[in-house]
Image (cartoon, rainbow, N blue to C red; front, side):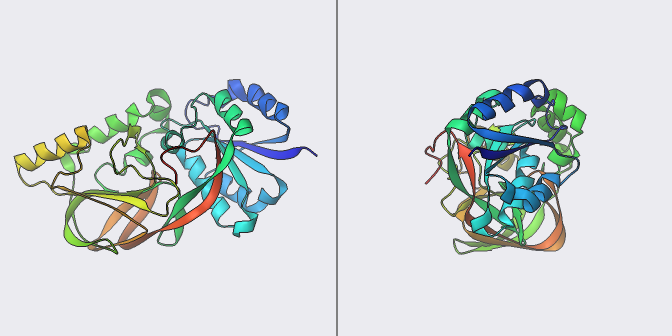
Length: 304
């Protein structure tokens, strides 16, 4: 009996590069032994809803789009009982494709399709942001609104350079927030301009090559916080640390954790997987270990 595969793609992601390759991708899956159903997503959260409603009809669900489409898909999977969670495949079709880079999935779509046919499932952790699942990064502060406020047309034309250009506009007008951070690893209260809790080796197209680059299924997420720089020396030290990825900078706080809480007196705007996550004074982030399976070519040093 043929295995059943649902191929969902977001027509608005990236430069719609799946369209000229669609028949080649379907042919690869058919030759790989799959009975293929194709579904273009129609609206935001459509991938989530389709997976939650129809996952039992398929052996594998392949999604093509950016990090947002993959995030919706993972959220749909982890809302199901663990025994009913369908295996995912991913064709990176967005502008930046951070999580695809973390999984070392080829950006060339037909190559990614072959990896799905020839690869094997990898169990990955996901995050829980105030009880809502997310894929790979929650963040607050400077630059975190860049992803969802950058025009889609600009993303399609420029790729991840669009995020950098949009972020530069905000550099002169950043704010800082007084936050109490609590986890099993540390407790700290200070003024911060930026922070994130992530499970990825790439954010905004920039690779994390430090010793703190997270594993994808060890039950821990990476947390990095940036203190408010108050002197020219602080600024210089911080910029140097970002460029060299030297995390011994005194203005950086870094640790790995399975649960962390952020409390502030004023509401702080958050993002989850590059989308607007709302404003909050109290945020708890925890890890859901080995929450879903996604097909990769092979496991590597970023996995347990």
